[in-house]
Image 1 (cartoon, protein in one colour):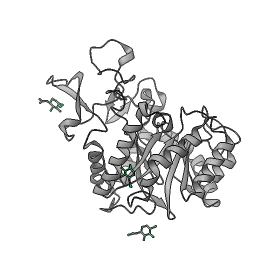
Image 2: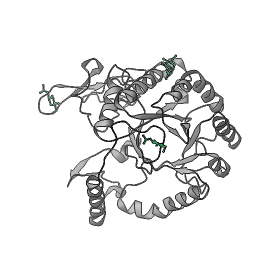
Image 3: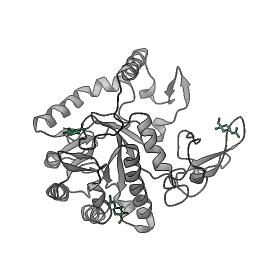
Amino acid sequence: MWILIATQLLIVGVDASRFWCHKFEDGQCIAPGDAGLTLTTEDKAKMSAFVKAVLSSSWQRPQVVNSSTIRNKVLAGYQGWAGARGTWDHWTNDGQMAPSATDPDVNHWEHFEMIPQMGEYPLGALQATGFKYHGNGSVVNVYANAAEGVVDLHFQWMKDYGMDGVLLQRFISDVINPGKGLDHFNTILAQADAAAAKHGRTYAIMYDMSGAASTWDTDIDADFVSHVKNYTSSERYLKEKGRPVVCIFGLGLVDHAQATVDSSLRFIRSMQANGFYVIGSGPYYWREGTHDALPGYSGVFTAFDAIMPWSVGRYSSALDFSRLGPLVEADAALTQSRGQGLMRT
Ligand SMILES: *[C@@H]1O[C@H](CO)[C@@H](O)[C@H](O)[C@H]1NC(C)=O
Ligand SMILES: *[C@@H]1O[C@H](CO)[C@@H](O)[C@H](O)[C@H]1NC(C)=O
Ligand SMILES: *[C@@H]1O[C@H](CO)[C@@H](O)[C@H](O)[C@H]1NC(C)=O
């Protein structure tokens, strides 16, 4: 799960080497060999001041989140994929077998950084791994995301801890193939809709076209009409300016060139013509068309209703915040000057 604030902040990333916590020192997570994570005294002071400011601010969140606007929301990115398809999907790197502390085969290594706290999950959602808890030797269980009660628990936690809801991720490369995950992700969608209603949270769909074919746009159109669109009229579905929010990840991003400028523009405009508020996410350097951004996509970024630059893994220290601050300010100035929204990850 990653976290956004609708002027926003994102926590968990995909690159395990950056997030694996090897050592605690003064409560800090240090990854040896990663200079970016070796915090200076100044970094620590800045981070500590930031955490204190957040904790002391009056973080009053409503019992029932106002789903008619995305403004000033704290949203998590929700993949809902743990235990999908194969029993161990996303718990092990190949999804094929139970993680085991004694298994020497690197093809089946565990794919999570920390053992989650399992105490509140329904027993029926748990599956035993080969790991044992250090100290008492009892078996470590992990959960199956689509099992009854799991999504509900995650939404309850969001309410307990003042988060407004989720962008529910939907990889078109997964859902296009019924054998690969359509049923799983449709189950998660139905559960999220019910849990949002029960716990007063909100949600919107976030398509990801990573790994999709050149037919990515018509594939999303078809999936959207068949499986998603009816949820967008749900009272808990997130809206902005009266229009249901749909987010798309990957347009204009390097290694995602199957989304051409033409197909990207067609997709965005047809979604907008059908009454949706379209948020584009993907490249961090979207304005410049450099680094992680394909050149020539400025028209695509102009067409979005809002832009969410993808910063997962980009801020490893307070120094990175200082270094990249001017870029974030320029993003804000440009989007504001043309009446677009800007979300921070
Ligand atoms: C919810 O947000 C909308 C859009 O900003 C606003 O018009 C409306 O008054 C809000 N509703 C409540 C109950 O605050
Ligand atoms: C063993 O330790 C883990 C981690 O502290 C704990 O969650 C679990 O309940 C313990 N098991 C037993 C049987 O005490
Ligand atoms: C959308 O359609 C699915 C499948 O027909 C159904 O289970 C679900 O309740 C519908 N959701 C809404 C919000 O109408």
